[in-house]
Image (tube, rainbow, N blue to C red; front, side, top):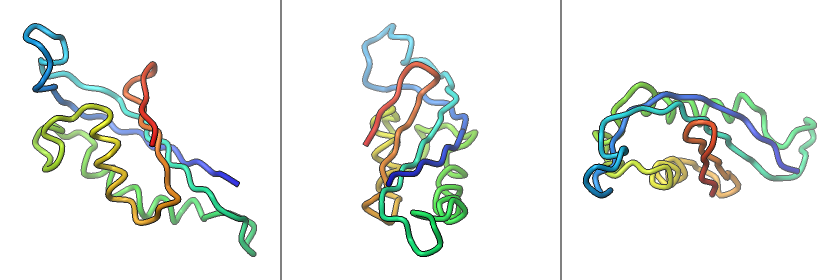
Length: 111
């Protein structure tokens, strides 16, 4: 079975490796939606994982990103959606976590 917990954060960034004049080369912000998926068997308590336990893992990560300038965070000097997703994924302790990171309402990356 697969469960999902959703989180929201707002951050600013600019992309350093886009061509001159590209709109993303300028400072701008996004509302990001992070969906965290956990896959596993239902345990004797009746769940795959307690949502509160997911919060304990994810909320400190969100705190590092929410209302910050992403380019200043070590490891996010080129904060594309893909790189942000990889950065988040490396902070997760379990291999059965997958994530989907929405940048706004139209675009997402998924691990």
